[in-house]
Image (tube, rainbow, N blue to C red; front, side, top):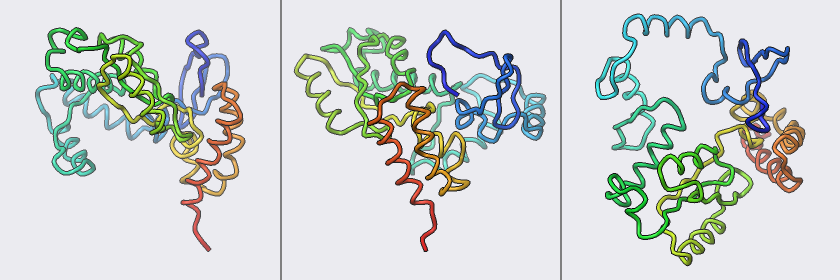
Length: 253
């Protein structure tokens, strides 16, 4: 599911499994939230039952307090994070998490930022993120008080990752103009805007049938290029990148 702009929203009335049902009769594969929020499908009775039991026992406590559920979550997260990384700050979602990370980075760079805001910096602060990043980063720059123009959207290598050469050129240009580079955020697109994201995470096709994902990559790239208004070069790069990944999942021999 894609949106071309803020003025063409859909009214979703219900959902079942990976499908959304709109008020105009459309049945839509949930490629927008499926990989992030409801990746096991919507309408799961067992999840609703667990949520109901938990809420009936404890609905809300302030963030600085703890509970058995929070402690279990921290223990599980600690299994996956690097050694020593055992402290967690829970937020309501990805945008709030990114905003908190931005404030932490700016305050660590200049502790005076907490009191003086952008005036604490010797020059205009800027930060770097992938050109294909989630656009919450531009809004976060506005919210943090450094302005939307502080966001440097760096060209990518065709897989959603920043090009090292483009990043170096952007930093050099900013240093010459008197800006203060403060944060580099290696950000792989979180929205459904790469073929790899759609095949690997949004639809799980890559994990269910790597050969089928390999074959459908050009068609997916064609559809996405049209929806996202990308050119043939982007389309070809997307197919090459995802087919390399598909090949790793196909058994040899």
